[in-house]
Image 1 (cartoon, helix red, strand yellow):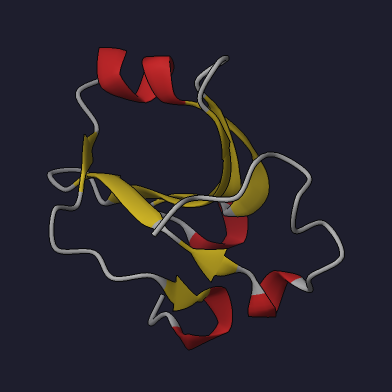
Image 2 (cartoon, helix red, strand yellow; image 1 turned 135 degrees about the vertical axis):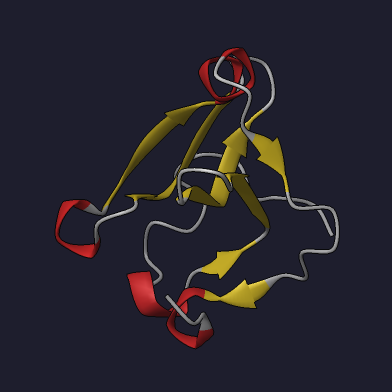
Length: 87
């Protein structure tokens, strides 16, 4: 399934946004959920949780920075609405 481009789903509520990828640093509990993506700039829009629900937020995510910090995509991730994800 193709990830929508940046701003393509901005009319969709956050709870209803489809999450197409999950990246994680499992040994520290950090994860990033990707809803939109610009492949030219390797910039995504999604939800970041740095092992603290109170510090979690929606925003822009640089895929190069994730890779530089050894985050990895979850291989068996299936697209799902954000509101249906167990967090």
